[in-house]
Every structure is written in C-alpha cells, then in structure tokens.
Image 1 (spheres, one colour):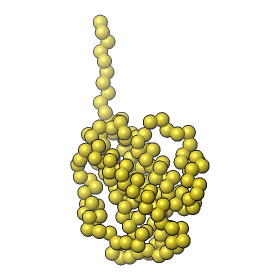
Image 2 (cartoon, rainbow, N blue to C red):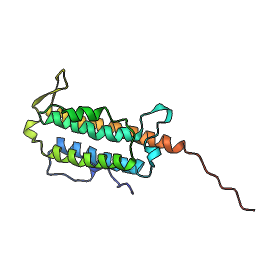
Image 3 (cartoon, helix red, strand yellow):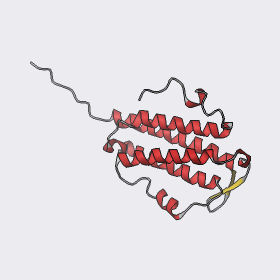
Image 4 (cartoon, rainbow, N blue to C red):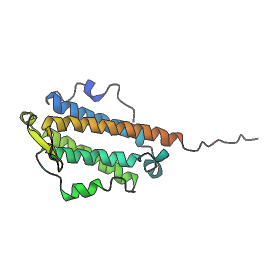
Length: 176
C-alpha cells in the first residue's frame, strides 16, 4: 500500500462530524493505515515474534481493538461483560496472522460506528472506569481511544522494524 501524502486529519474529511469525534476517527484511520503499512507483509511467525522479549505485534493489534471495545463500553455508560474480561486475558495467546488481522479490521469498523453514534451533547457526562469507578467523562474516554491506539501503533511500527531487521540476510553466491 502506498501511503497517502497527508495524514487523515489533513485531508479535509469527516467535516460534518464535530471536532472531538472527527479527531478520534482520524486517529483510528491513521492507525489502520500505519498497521497496514508496517505489518501486512509479515508472516505468522513474524507477527507473533517476541524480539528481546517485546510483546508481539499480534498482541498490540488485539489489544488496540479490545481496548477500544472496553473504552467505548464505558463511554456508552456500560460496564464490562464477562466476555470482555475473558478476552483481556487472551491478548497474548498464539494464533494466526489472518485471524488477528481480521479481528483488528473488524474491531476498528465497530469502534468507528460506535464513536459516530455518541452524541456530542454527552461529552461532558461523567463516567466511572473499572471496579474503583475512576472518574472521567465521555470526551475523556473518546480522547483516550485515540491516544491509546496511537501509542500501540508506535509499538507495532517499532517491533515490526526490529523483527524485519533480525531476519537472516540471504546472500547469493556468484555463479562462476
């Protein structure tokens, strides 16, 4: 994939959406593009590699969309389900690159739909996070969706570079 010349927030898109949700949607769009650029060519082995003990790229892809699901559940006024809590415990599990990529793509699509559905008039509504009900707001959760996702995209890019750099270099012997 050839990266676009500008980042999503500079493309003049989503102009009918308020600035808060637009910024979050642009951050998720950039995440999708960066993940595609840096990890689509990687094999199953590379996606699950743990160079120097780093978490694998597959973990970050799962973690990004599962965290989006959890954060948006709180933003919508809900509490985490048993399924969400169980999924949290399996983010480091082995699997296939195809399954992880599919979960990532589907998770981003679902997050986008859920973000668009949150009315701006609820941005200041208070929300409690976790068992301790740590205080935040709907807007705080939306902004953290963007922040957290981009943080893990950075880890994907760094880990992909390390994984590729550690691959054995194949040299061809010149023919006599």
